[in-house]
Amino acid sequence: MKHTVIPRVLIILLGIAALVMGVPLVMAAVLGETGMIKAFAIPMAVILVPAALTAFFTRKQPLLFTPSDGFLLVFSAWLFTCLLGAAPYCISGIVHVCDAVFESVGGFATTGVTTIANIEALPRSLLLWRSLTYWLGGMGIVMITVAFMPILGVGGFQLLKAETSGPEKEKVTPRVTATAKFLWFLYCGLSVVLILLYRLGNMSWFDAVCHGLATIASGGASTRNSGIASFNSGFIDAVATIFMLLAGLNFNLYYKLLRGKFRDVFTNTEGRAYILIFLVSAAVLTASLVPVYGGSALRYASFQAASILSTTGSAIADYEAWPELAKAVLLCLMFAGGCSGSTAGGIKVIRHAVLFKQAGNELRRLVYPRGIFSIHLNRKVGRKDVVYGVAGFVFLYLMVVAVTALVTAASGTDIFSSFSAALVITGNIGTGFGAAGPARNYGAFPDHIKWLFSFVMIAGRLELWTVFVLFTPEYWRR
Image (tube, rainbow, N blue to C red; front, side, top):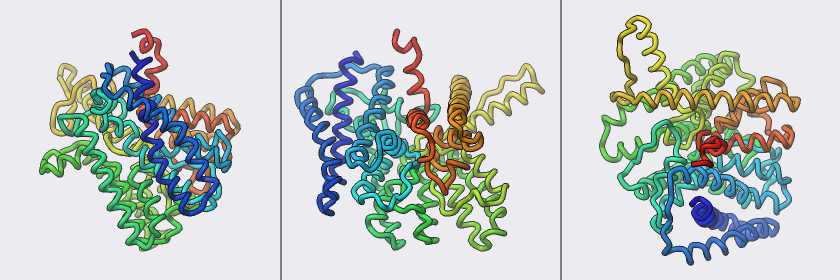
C-alpha cells in the first residue's frame, strides 16, 4: 500500500512547502533581486503543477493508511522537503550542492547551523526563506498535512505519532485534525507576539520577522553575522530568553492552561523539571559570570541557559571564553534538551525524569528486594514499557553521537570538536565547542561530514526511531 499512498501524499505535502516559497519570491520581485526570482520560481513550478493535478484528480479517492506507513512517509517528507528547500541556494549559485542541502536541513531541523561566513551578504529574500524553513520545521511540515487530512481522505494520527517528540504521544483534542489546527493556531499566535516584541525592541520589521520565525522554532538563525548579539539590547535578549523557554515547553500544557486545567499544568513532571533545570543552571552560570560581567551576569547566564536547554543555539557572547564551570554547565545542558511535544530537540527532559525515577526505584530495590516499585509521572503511575522505551532511546541516541563523533574525528577534526559537533548535531542544538563553537561555522568540515551531519540532523529531529526503523529487515517484511 505504501507504494501508492506515499507518493500521492508526499507530492501534495511538497506542494504546500512550495506555496510557502511564494512569499520570498514576491519579496525578491519587489526588491528587484532578479537572480533570486528564478531561484524560487523554478522549484515552485516543478512542484506545484504535479501537486495541483494530484490533489484535483485524487481528491475523491480514499486512502488506506497503516501506522507503519507513517514512518516512511514522515522520513520521505522531511528528506524531499529539505531537498526542495536547498533548491534556491543551488540555483542562485550562492553555495554548492552539499552546502545548500546542509543549510536547508539545518533550517527544517531547526538546528541553527550554517556554512556561510557572511550571512549579511545574502539576498534578503533568501534570508527570509531561511527563516521560513526554521519556522516550518519547528512545528513540523507534516503537521500541515495532518491539518488538511480531511481533504486527502485519511486520518492523521499515525503521522502525528511519527512526527511528534517524546516517549508518549498524546492528542491534545479528541480529533487529530483539531489537534493539528490548535497547535498551528498557537504556534502562529506566539510567532506574531514575538515578532511584535522584537519590533518594539527597535529591530527593523525584516529583522523582527526573520528572528521571530527562527526563535519560536527553537532555531538560532539570524540575519546578522554576529546573531542576535549584534542588536546589543537587554530588552531583546530578555524577550528571546522568555520565548526560547516557551518554545521548549510541551505545547499540550498551553492547551490545558487555556482550558483552565491549572492543576494538570502545575503537576506536570516534565514541565516542573524543565523549569527547575533552567533555574538551577542559570543560577550557577550567574554566579560563575559575575567576575566577568558584573551586574549583567544574569542577562548572559539566563539567555545562554535558555538557548542551550531549548536547543535554540543562539549566543550573545563567545561562551568558550567563559570560566570552566560555566562551560561545564552548558555542556551538561546539551544532554538535556527541551520538553516532549515542543519545538526543541535533544534527549528531552521527560526521558531524564523517567530514568532518574527508575534509578531511585533500583536503589530502593536493593534495600527491599521483594518490594514492587513504579515510577510516577504527573502524579500517576507510569507504564513499565515507557521505561524500556526511554532506556532504548537514550542508548540509541548516545550511539549515534558516538558513531558521528568517530567518523568526524576520522576526517582529521580534533576529538573534542568532533564530540561537540556530534552532540549538537544529533540534538539539533546548533552551537557547541571547538570547531562547532559560537564564533565559528561548519564550513570547515569536509563535504562527506556535512552529508553525514545532514542525515543525523533529520534523524535527530524525528526522534531517531522514525528513521532507524526503516533500516530494519522486519519493517520491509511486514
